Length: 349
Image (cartoon, rainbow, N blue to C red; front, side, top):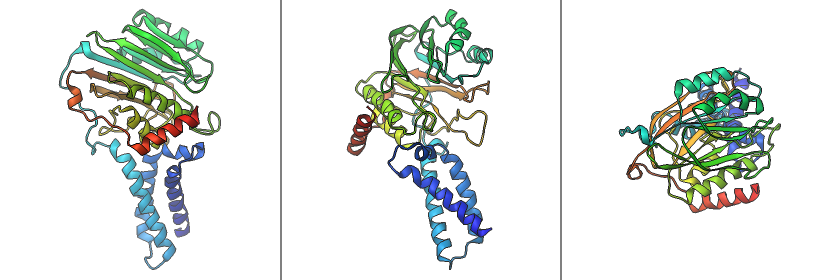
C-alpha cells in the first residue's frame, strides 16, 4: 500500500509541477484546469501519507516534502477564488436600472438541440445581451424568436465549434466580426448604448481549447487573448470581455491577460462559478469568463441550470457607476510581464 501511496503522491507532484514549465504544449497546459481537484486530492493523500510516513526513510521524507510543496502551490493558486479572499469587485449599493447591463453567455454545444430549454433560461434571466457559442445555422434558426425582443444582432454561425451569435436589446454601435489570429475562429466586438445613454465596449471571444483534436499548443489561444488585452488597456472607458476562454482564471495566461488588460475579475473573493463540464462534476472548472473595467460594480452573478449543453450558462449583471474607479484597484503588468506579452503575441501571430 505504501508503494502505491508514494506513486500517487509523485503523480500529483508532477501534475502540479508541469504547468510551471513555460511551454505551450496542450498536455502541459491542461494541468492548469483541475487545480481545485488536484488540491483536494493532494490534501487527502497528504493526510494518509502522514499516517504511514517513517521519518527515517529518506525517499519517503523527500516525497512528503514535495507533496507539501504541491499542496501549498495549488492552494495559493486557488485561494483567490474562495470567499476567504477580499472581493476584487465590490457589490453595488447604487441601483439604477438605466445604468445596468445584464449579460448571459452560453456555450450551447454544437450537437445539442435543446433550444427551448435555452429560451426558457433567457425568459427567466431576462438579460440585455446574449452571447451564444458553438452555434451553427440550426441554432440561428432555432433562436430566431429572440429577435422580436432583441432586435440588434451580430451573427457568424459555423458548422465547426466556433460559431457565435449575439442578441441585444441595446443598440449596437460599430459591430465587428474579427479573426484576430486564426481565419476560422471569430471574435465579436461592439459598443452598446445603455438606457442611461452611456456607451460600453463589449468583446466576445472563443479561442481554441488545448487538446490534440483542436490545438496541440496554446500559442494562438494565448495570443488572441493578449492582443485584445492590449487593445482595451489603451483606453479608459467602460469595457467588458466575455466568452468561453478555454482557459481557467488562475492559469498563467489568463492572469497575464488580466494584468495586461487592467480589467477586474468578479469571481475573486466569491468562488469559481464552474461552467464546464456540466456532465461530469469530477471534471468541472470555470471556462466561461467575464472581465470588466473598474467602472462597474457587481449586482448579481450566477451559473444557470443544466439544460442540455456540456456548459452551464453564465449570467452577470453589472452596474456602471460614477466615481467607482476610486473604490476599486485595477490590476496592471510589470516590465517582465510586458515582455512576456510581447513574446506571446509575436509567437502567436
